[in-house]
Length: 149
Image 1 (cartoon, helix red, strand yellow):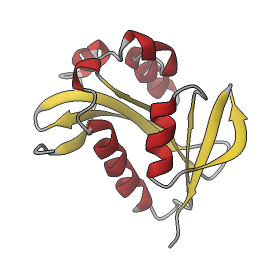
Image 2: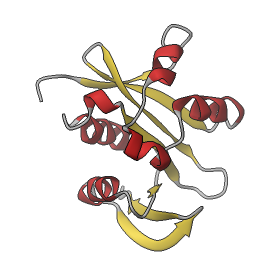
Image 3: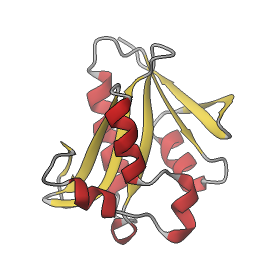
Image 4: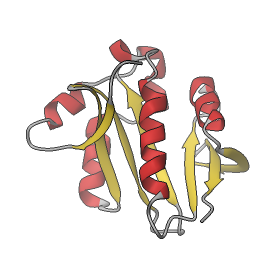
């Protein structure tokens, strides 16, 4: 990959572009629309929504934060726009998220969940070091990663 992946704030200047990003039709039921995620982050302020950029092009969206229920950083959303899939952007964005969260002094564990039939997400997350726990949350498989200090 000859591009630089960065995570940037959603702002007045780019929020419309963010909500126009879409997965493939077959993936729509795997992740909430970005507009819903932005609304959730506005009211549940522990969640940090970020645009995924490949150089200067917005290619996806991710949202993460420290759970109010447990001392765990959750990655709540990850999506790459349909026209930008298959280029390694999702993996590169996840690696960037993981690097940033692991630098947080209060980060002892990371968690993510995904639809059981989403084989692509499962393969990606397990390859990054997440391990399935047997937990099911809202019908989704939970995977966690301890962060050693």
